Length: 220
Length: 271
Image 1 (cartoon, each protein chain N blue to C red):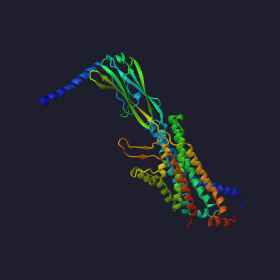
Image 2: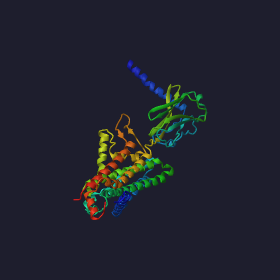
Image 3: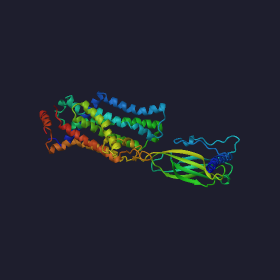
Image 4: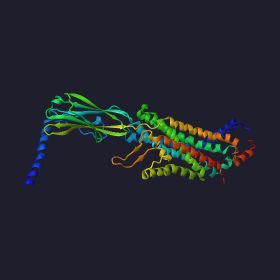
């Protein structure tokens, strides 16, 4: 009997939380734009659209930008994240939402989190993160989470992905291959003119060469 | 007795005569036309195909890197074509019977033949790079060109000297020109790359002393990777040639094999 009643309690907790979440969601109709796929450019992500007649309440990650479009390995890149409050009230005045948390991730690793920031109505705020570029294609994801007072939990509300391609650092310098090409030319030229020196010092003409010289009546 | 200056001038003149003769021979046998056409057509494929069916890569470096992966193949083709029968042809066709008794030093004959193979090979590489440069300017604009292109071009020229030296060595050792051409081609195309891959992936040793491995520098100047793991949890280890070591290896092959080939050619006797 005891076991059944515990199960019944556990079974009830889920729908209650779900119902509570739905109620909160209906109270706060925050629009969540489509998730950006890895590789999708940030410009291609559709901005949040309000439904006609619906009370607007949207705080979105409007932009992720990089200070350089085609960076090279080792460059210092500033990743800028813009959060826009399109709402008519300030972020600090929200009653149901306890706080807004924005996390910047590099692939799966969390780089930095910003929380408890105040954002006035119809305004934007930019957060910067400095990153030393490593070669390859990198995906940065910004996730915005609302901490709801009633639920005591975070709800992911917006997510944006941006991809950056870092060109590897240039290897070597130009002087070395130039010097090697010159050296090859010099060695070949020396090989051409060397018999003129060596044949004088040592009688290195092959018997055939000697014979041909003799046949043509050519003196050494 | 002639002065050293006269002797040097005569040797240089004789070498030049051989170079001229070799170049004329390559023109007459339509080798120049074939290889020059390849040098234009191959890079054009990388322009025409994406233009019709797909998009070009995002950066000029990526486009060039993709395109220039095949320049080493063209270097091997051109090197085998021009140097494959440089020495062996004289012995097989018995034309050496007319050539070798002349008062011209044997050394100048063979050096002339070597340079006569090297010049068209380098010209082929230059035409290939010129075509790629034209494509890059056409797609990405003049600003996309940087010093890496010149660096890659110089590395390709050095690799062509080493490829010609390898084929020249086979030509001086072997009796038949078809054998020397094919052996030179396949050693650069298959044998050395297979050894290099076995060492890399099975033995997990860097084959830095193999010239075809160093040829990777032609494209690595655009997108170098020192040593890349195969993803989370390890995977296949992939090596990339070091710039300075790679160039040193190419230089060693060029000079070493050139002198060995030269010595064998001079010592070789007509049967």
